[in-house]
Amino acid sequence: MSSSTKEKKYCKWFWDETLGGEFDTWGTSTYFIEVIQVGNDLCATRQIEVYENGNVLFYDDNHFADNYGMLCDKPLSKADLLEFGITRAEFEQIWQTKTPINRLSWLAEAEQYEISN
Image 1 (cartoon, rainbow, N blue to C red):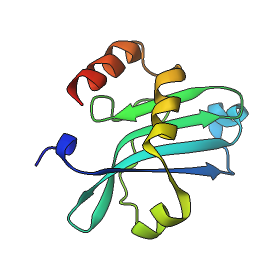
Image 2: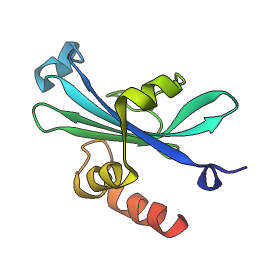
Image 3: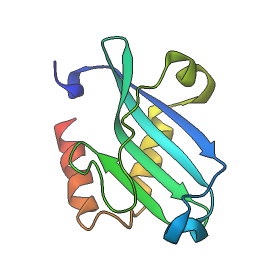
């Protein structure tokens, strides 16, 4: 079953630690994650990171990792969704309005995602 036919869920949480190293000045961040259920696990399919200094990173199946970080590779729990769950509309609003610094062709990919879903 493809990820486009599975029910998607969304969560958001504040991460109160910096990335460290050369990205330490970015500050703390807020994560927005879209997940699907795979077996008993909730696996990330899209991820947005919004940093205190305004930098934004996007990750998904087409852009899994780069020099800044990567799509969450650890399963989330149903408890995470209960505590940190948000609506699809809230996630999509951020996905459609923020400009990620790690995706030169993010607009074309976002439009392709819209067409396929």
